[in-house]
Length: 151
Image 1 (tube, helix red, strand yellow):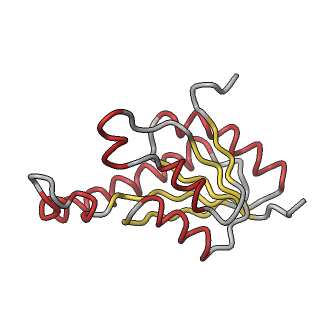
Image 2 (cartoon, one colour):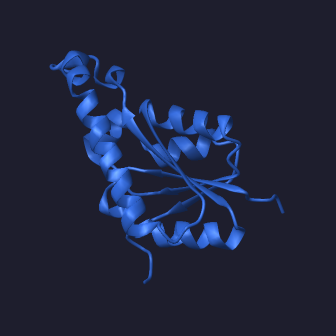
Image 3 (cartoon, one colour):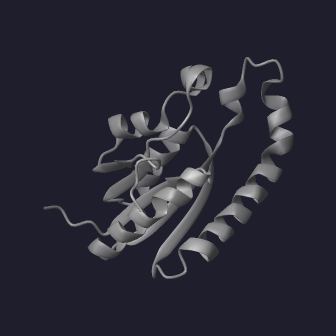
């Protein structure tokens, strides 16, 4: 059995994130692992070709980063103060590529990711993050459906 010392939990700060957190905490404690939390803000290139284009997005990037930092602080304060070793990171880029790059550069041993997400046209345009991570990850990926967790 491979040793799990570092667990990555990519977050989007939706209510689904909060629902998955008990599973993440339990797994982190069970393995005695360090928890890494990553939030990725979509890069402006993902909006190229849209009527508004990437130019409008560039002006919002600072606000998006500030909001993400505030949400990360809330997440830690409300849910993770009892977890010893937590490292947080916020990036801008393609979500799947950024997650995989983070895994590789931080020697992550396991990813825990929600299976919730976009449906319909949004899924066609942006794809499934969980699916992309599962296909590309160099480590085990635990997927959790936040709407099927028994409390």
